[in-house]
Image (cartoon, rainbow, N blue to C red; front, side, top):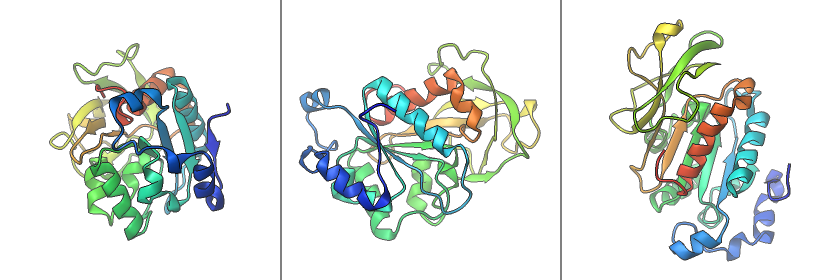
Length: 258
Protein backbone atom coordinates (compact mmCIF):
# COMPACT_ATOMS: atom_id res chain seq x y z
CA UNK A 1 0.00 0.00 0.00
CA UNK A 2 1.08 3.58 -0.50
CA UNK A 3 2.81 5.74 2.02
CA UNK A 4 0.14 7.69 3.88
CA UNK A 5 -1.87 4.66 4.98
CA UNK A 6 -0.63 3.14 8.20
CA UNK A 7 -1.45 0.11 10.33
CA UNK A 8 -0.30 0.46 13.91
CA UNK A 9 0.15 -2.37 16.43
CA UNK A 10 -1.96 -1.87 19.53
CA UNK A 11 1.05 -1.00 21.67
CA UNK A 12 2.24 1.80 19.40
CA UNK A 13 -0.95 3.38 18.07
CA UNK A 14 -1.07 6.42 20.35
CA UNK A 15 2.66 7.10 20.05
CA UNK A 16 2.48 6.84 16.28
CA UNK A 17 -0.45 9.23 16.17
CA UNK A 18 1.42 11.73 18.28
CA UNK A 19 4.51 11.44 16.09
CA UNK A 20 2.29 11.97 13.07
CA UNK A 21 1.17 15.27 14.55
CA UNK A 22 -2.32 14.40 15.72
CA UNK A 23 -1.74 16.14 19.03
CA UNK A 24 -1.03 19.38 17.23
CA UNK A 25 -3.78 19.00 14.64
CA UNK A 26 -6.95 21.01 15.31
CA UNK A 27 -9.92 18.82 16.14
CA UNK A 28 -12.03 17.98 13.08
CA UNK A 29 -14.97 18.75 15.32
CA UNK A 30 -14.26 22.48 15.44
CA UNK A 31 -12.24 23.19 12.30
CA UNK A 32 -13.06 26.29 10.33
CA UNK A 33 -14.15 25.74 6.69
CA UNK A 34 -10.81 27.16 5.48
CA UNK A 35 -8.85 24.79 7.72
CA UNK A 36 -10.91 21.82 6.57
CA UNK A 37 -10.11 22.59 2.94
CA UNK A 38 -6.39 22.84 3.73
CA UNK A 39 -6.11 19.52 5.59
CA UNK A 40 -6.45 15.93 4.41
CA UNK A 41 -9.41 14.21 6.03
CA UNK A 42 -8.40 11.41 8.40
CA UNK A 43 -10.27 8.15 8.91
CA UNK A 44 -9.79 5.57 11.66
CA UNK A 45 -10.61 2.06 10.40
CA UNK A 46 -11.54 -0.05 13.42
CA UNK A 47 -11.91 -3.84 13.21
CA UNK A 48 -11.94 -5.20 16.78
CA UNK A 49 -14.04 -8.35 17.21
CA UNK A 50 -15.37 -9.98 20.37
CA UNK A 51 -17.58 -12.43 18.51
CA UNK A 52 -17.54 -13.85 15.00
CA UNK A 53 -14.49 -12.75 13.03
CA UNK A 54 -14.97 -12.33 9.30
CA UNK A 55 -12.16 -13.57 7.11
CA UNK A 56 -12.93 -10.65 4.80
CA UNK A 57 -11.51 -8.12 7.30
CA UNK A 58 -8.01 -7.87 5.74
CA UNK A 59 -9.52 -7.39 2.27
CA UNK A 60 -12.02 -4.87 3.61
CA UNK A 61 -9.27 -2.85 5.31
CA UNK A 62 -7.17 -2.81 2.14
CA UNK A 63 -10.13 -1.63 0.08
CA UNK A 64 -11.05 1.13 2.53
CA UNK A 65 -7.43 2.27 2.42
CA UNK A 66 -7.43 2.28 -1.37
CA UNK A 67 -10.68 4.24 -1.47
CA UNK A 68 -9.34 6.69 1.10
CA UNK A 69 -6.25 7.24 -1.05
CA UNK A 70 -8.45 7.77 -4.09
CA UNK A 71 -10.40 10.43 -2.22
CA UNK A 72 -7.26 12.12 -0.85
CA UNK A 73 -7.74 10.96 2.75
CA UNK A 74 -5.35 9.52 5.33
CA UNK A 75 -6.41 6.18 6.83
CA UNK A 76 -5.27 4.55 10.08
CA UNK A 77 -6.20 0.94 10.85
CA UNK A 78 -6.38 -0.28 14.43
CA UNK A 79 -7.91 -2.85 16.75
CA UNK A 80 -6.66 -1.02 19.84
CA UNK A 81 -9.54 0.32 21.98
CA UNK A 82 -7.14 2.93 23.35
CA UNK A 83 -8.03 4.84 20.19
CA UNK A 84 -11.26 5.86 21.89
CA UNK A 85 -10.26 8.88 23.95
CA UNK A 86 -11.29 12.48 23.43
CA UNK A 87 -7.76 13.52 22.47
CA UNK A 88 -7.13 10.75 19.94
CA UNK A 89 -10.56 10.78 18.31
CA UNK A 90 -10.17 14.53 17.80
CA UNK A 91 -7.57 13.74 15.14
CA UNK A 92 -10.11 12.01 12.88
CA UNK A 93 -12.95 13.20 10.70
CA UNK A 94 -14.67 9.79 10.81
CA UNK A 95 -14.37 6.37 12.41
CA UNK A 96 -15.26 3.30 10.34
CA UNK A 97 -16.40 0.17 12.17
CA UNK A 98 -15.56 -2.49 9.57
CA UNK A 99 -16.95 -5.94 10.45
CA UNK A 100 -16.65 -5.36 14.18
CA UNK A 101 -18.57 -7.78 16.41
CA UNK A 102 -19.52 -8.22 20.03
CA UNK A 103 -19.32 -6.07 23.18
CA UNK A 104 -16.39 -3.86 22.19
CA UNK A 105 -15.07 -0.84 24.20
CA UNK A 106 -15.31 -0.16 27.91
CA UNK A 107 -17.64 2.47 29.43
CA UNK A 108 -15.08 5.30 29.28
CA UNK A 109 -14.22 4.52 25.65
CA UNK A 110 -17.87 4.35 24.72
CA UNK A 111 -18.51 7.70 26.39
CA UNK A 112 -15.62 9.27 24.45
CA UNK A 113 -17.03 7.96 21.17
CA UNK A 114 -20.47 9.30 22.01
CA UNK A 115 -19.01 12.74 22.72
CA UNK A 116 -17.08 12.56 19.45
CA UNK A 117 -20.18 11.84 17.38
CA UNK A 118 -22.34 14.35 19.23
CA UNK A 119 -19.71 17.02 18.53
CA UNK A 120 -19.83 16.30 14.79
CA UNK A 121 -17.54 13.31 14.23
CA UNK A 122 -18.53 10.88 11.49
CA UNK A 123 -19.36 7.17 11.69
CA UNK A 124 -19.29 4.55 8.94
CA UNK A 125 -20.46 1.00 9.61
CA UNK A 126 -19.85 -2.01 7.38
CA UNK A 127 -21.86 -5.25 7.59
CA UNK A 128 -21.36 -6.68 11.11
CA UNK A 129 -21.02 -3.23 12.61
CA UNK A 130 -24.70 -4.04 13.17
CA UNK A 131 -23.68 -7.19 15.09
CA UNK A 132 -21.82 -5.10 17.66
CA UNK A 133 -22.53 -3.51 21.03
CA UNK A 134 -25.87 -5.08 21.94
CA UNK A 135 -25.30 -3.91 25.52
CA UNK A 136 -24.79 -0.31 24.30
CA UNK A 137 -28.21 1.23 23.51
CA UNK A 138 -26.80 4.47 22.12
CA UNK A 139 -24.70 2.55 19.62
CA UNK A 140 -27.76 0.63 18.46
CA UNK A 141 -29.38 3.95 17.62
CA UNK A 142 -26.20 5.18 15.91
CA UNK A 143 -25.89 2.15 13.64
CA UNK A 144 -29.63 2.37 12.99
CA UNK A 145 -30.66 -1.29 13.38
CA UNK A 146 -29.08 -4.31 15.01
CA UNK A 147 -28.59 -7.68 13.34
CA UNK A 148 -31.33 -10.23 13.98
CA UNK A 149 -30.48 -13.20 11.74
CA UNK A 150 -29.32 -14.11 8.27
CA UNK A 151 -30.35 -16.74 5.74
CA UNK A 152 -28.06 -19.75 5.39
CA UNK A 153 -25.02 -19.19 3.23
CA UNK A 154 -24.51 -16.57 0.57
CA UNK A 155 -27.54 -15.67 -1.51
CA UNK A 156 -28.23 -13.42 -4.47
CA UNK A 157 -30.48 -10.39 -4.63
CA UNK A 158 -30.82 -7.18 -6.57
CA UNK A 159 -29.87 -3.97 -4.79
CA UNK A 160 -32.37 -1.19 -5.44
CA UNK A 161 -31.35 2.38 -4.68
CA UNK A 162 -33.88 4.91 -3.45
CA UNK A 163 -34.91 7.75 -5.75
CA UNK A 164 -32.32 10.49 -5.60
CA UNK A 165 -29.64 8.15 -4.25
CA UNK A 166 -28.99 6.11 -7.38
CA UNK A 167 -25.50 4.70 -7.81
CA UNK A 168 -24.00 5.23 -11.28
CA UNK A 169 -23.79 1.94 -13.16
CA UNK A 170 -25.84 0.04 -10.58
CA UNK A 171 -29.35 0.20 -12.04
CA UNK A 172 -29.36 -3.60 -12.42
CA UNK A 173 -26.91 -4.44 -9.63
CA UNK A 174 -27.19 -8.02 -8.38
CA UNK A 175 -25.03 -9.10 -5.47
CA UNK A 176 -24.24 -12.37 -3.73
CA UNK A 177 -23.55 -11.85 -0.05
CA UNK A 178 -24.78 -12.66 3.45
CA UNK A 179 -28.01 -10.69 3.67
CA UNK A 180 -28.86 -9.58 7.19
CA UNK A 181 -32.33 -9.42 8.67
CA UNK A 182 -32.49 -6.60 11.22
CA UNK A 183 -34.30 -6.29 14.55
CA UNK A 184 -36.23 -3.33 13.20
CA UNK A 185 -36.75 -1.53 9.95
CA UNK A 186 -34.49 1.55 10.16
CA UNK A 187 -36.62 3.62 7.79
CA UNK A 188 -38.41 5.61 10.54
CA UNK A 189 -35.03 6.51 12.07
CA UNK A 190 -32.76 7.00 9.04
CA UNK A 191 -32.68 7.92 5.36
CA UNK A 192 -32.69 4.66 3.45
CA UNK A 193 -30.15 4.44 0.63
CA UNK A 194 -30.88 0.99 -0.78
CA UNK A 195 -32.97 -2.15 -0.27
CA UNK A 196 -32.73 -5.81 -1.24
CA UNK A 197 -35.50 -7.92 -2.77
CA UNK A 198 -36.55 -10.82 -0.53
CA UNK A 199 -38.47 -12.42 -3.41
CA UNK A 200 -35.11 -13.34 -4.95
CA UNK A 201 -33.73 -15.41 -2.06
CA UNK A 202 -34.76 -17.61 0.85
CA UNK A 203 -34.77 -16.58 4.49
CA UNK A 204 -35.67 -12.89 4.42
CA UNK A 205 -37.90 -11.83 7.33
CA UNK A 206 -38.47 -8.10 6.76
CA UNK A 207 -40.98 -8.24 3.92
CA UNK A 208 -41.35 -5.94 0.95
CA UNK A 209 -39.28 -3.15 2.50
CA UNK A 210 -35.87 -4.56 3.44
CA UNK A 211 -33.29 -1.74 3.77
CA UNK A 212 -29.65 -2.76 3.37
CA UNK A 213 -27.97 0.69 3.53
CA UNK A 214 -28.93 3.96 5.20
CA UNK A 215 -27.65 7.20 6.76
CA UNK A 216 -28.71 9.73 9.36
CA UNK A 217 -27.46 12.66 11.44
CA UNK A 218 -29.56 12.18 14.57
CA UNK A 219 -26.70 12.58 17.05
CA UNK A 220 -24.81 15.57 15.68
CA UNK A 221 -22.39 13.72 13.39
CA UNK A 222 -23.00 11.89 10.12
CA UNK A 223 -23.70 8.16 10.32
CA UNK A 224 -23.66 5.85 7.27
CA UNK A 225 -24.14 2.08 7.22
CA UNK A 226 -24.16 -0.72 4.65
CA UNK A 227 -25.18 -4.29 5.41
CA UNK A 228 -23.11 -5.58 2.50
CA UNK A 229 -19.50 -6.65 2.97
CA UNK A 230 -19.51 -10.16 4.46
CA UNK A 231 -17.95 -11.96 1.52
CA UNK A 232 -14.40 -11.26 0.42
CA UNK A 233 -15.30 -11.23 -3.26
CA UNK A 234 -17.76 -8.34 -3.02
CA UNK A 235 -14.86 -5.97 -2.30
CA UNK A 236 -13.65 -6.48 -5.88
CA UNK A 237 -17.01 -5.32 -7.29
CA UNK A 238 -16.55 -1.76 -8.62
CA UNK A 239 -20.14 -0.91 -7.70
CA UNK A 240 -19.62 -1.94 -4.09
CA UNK A 241 -16.40 0.06 -4.01
CA UNK A 242 -18.27 3.11 -5.32
CA UNK A 243 -20.95 2.53 -2.69
CA UNK A 244 -18.30 2.45 0.06
CA UNK A 245 -16.53 5.51 -1.32
CA UNK A 246 -19.79 7.43 -1.23
CA UNK A 247 -20.13 6.39 2.42
CA UNK A 248 -16.61 7.55 3.24
CA UNK A 249 -17.20 10.91 1.63
CA UNK A 250 -20.46 11.36 3.46
CA UNK A 251 -19.16 10.30 6.88
CA UNK A 252 -16.17 12.65 6.61
CA UNK A 253 -18.38 15.56 5.60
CA UNK A 254 -16.89 15.81 2.12
CA UNK A 255 -20.25 15.11 0.45
CA UNK A 256 -23.74 16.04 1.59
CA UNK A 257 -25.54 13.29 -0.30
CA UNK A 258 -25.31 9.79 1.15
